[in-house]
Amino acid sequence: MVTPVSQPRLFKLPDVGEGLTEAEIVKWHVQPGDTVEDGQTIVEIETAKAIVELPCPFDGVVTELLVTEGETVDVGVPIISVDAEGEGGVATPVSEPPAQDAALREEGVPTANEPGMVSPDEPPKRQPVLVGYGVKEGTTKRRARKPANGAPPPAPAPQAPAPQAPAPRPQPVDNGLPLAKPPVRKMARDLGVDLASITGSGPQGSITREDVLAAQAGPEAVPVQAAREERMPVKGVRKATAAAMSSSAFTAPHVTEFLQVDVTRTMETVKRLRELPEFAEVKVSPLLLVARALLTAVARNPMVNAAWADGPSGAEIVVKRYVNLGIAAATERGLIVPKVKDAQDLDLPGLARALVELTEKARAGKASPADLSDGTITITNVGVFGVDTGTPILTPGEAAILAFGQIRDMPWVHEGELAVRKVTTLSLSFDHRIVDGELGSRVLRDVGDMLEDPIRMLAWS
Image (cartoon, rainbow, N blue to C red):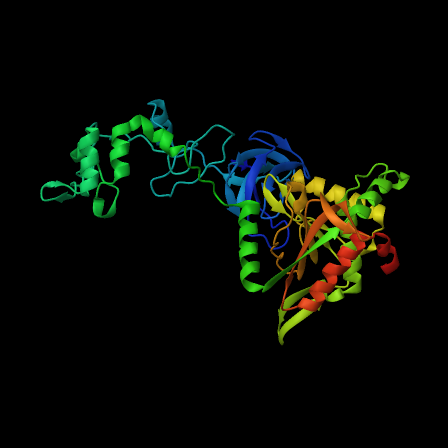
């Protein structure tokens, strides 16, 4: 007769975009035995750029989770097994048991034709089983059959003796004494510590001051010492950020310039914008006008919105006629940079909404790889941390990044008189292969002028 055996389908970790090679399993939304449907979210993964929800590509019942939460796997590795519905199964022939097997079953002896048993001439095979039941591959053993002549079964082969533990390593000695420097010996005598009872951690096994102090404190002090340090694996966003920043710092020649700006009028403009009906449901912050000022400066100086590329015929400078504006956002997973795509086409209310929606999405861990890629120029708002300025590192593939510091009340010469004004510091880092000092200074000065008098954004747009 023929018994249909369902063949579970394996869902392999896909490349969710941008040529990613690995991802971490963050959270499973299903467990073995759960019924899943095509398109249903089954797992959250963390890539080098974002947390992504993966849908199941078919209907069925989950048979096994092949990867645990917190584990990092390569693209193409199976992560879940699903008994897909409607597949029909694969027919596996099962022959009728021979007479001798029936006789053996009457004696309580399992046979090779029973489920889970393996013929001695065949390699062990994994049997389709229900969730939580059955045997693991390669672990099934069959009971020895009774000989037909009634003779006792052969004695089992003698087992090899268990390996003995290695002898303790002899303590390094110096003229018959444990190896230690004279000051360490004196400390041990003063503290009443027997050097012969200590295993040294110094060069050539010598005993150090720390070894003596640890011996005096006793074994109960070991957990306290261990708690003084914490080691965290570098993965996900932090791993990608570290690699990208190291690459950027050592491949693109960075130059950074700084400019202090009176932004009193910018702050007044922000206050007035908040009162307009077009911004009634949108958060308006000084960052909005900084972004608009940078977009205007890019339109006036297109070379700052470029990238260095190695083409087939040599190095090339690729000038972008569009602006995918990156906004650096600090999240629990590390620093990520979501992009406002085609920001040059947005009006001020549209730019305000895009900035709010994208940064909130990023902080919630919902930004997609597409949201985090293909940037052309970036703003990092270090002022939200109470920092005046900094030297930002370029995002790989971009020619410039603008840092926006905190806004503080400072004494300032305004219209010939000393006054207290709202002042901030801007810094612009740029790739000196693309942007020379004159261009970088012009861009930074343009942004500063527009923040000193926001009406210039209209005049230059």
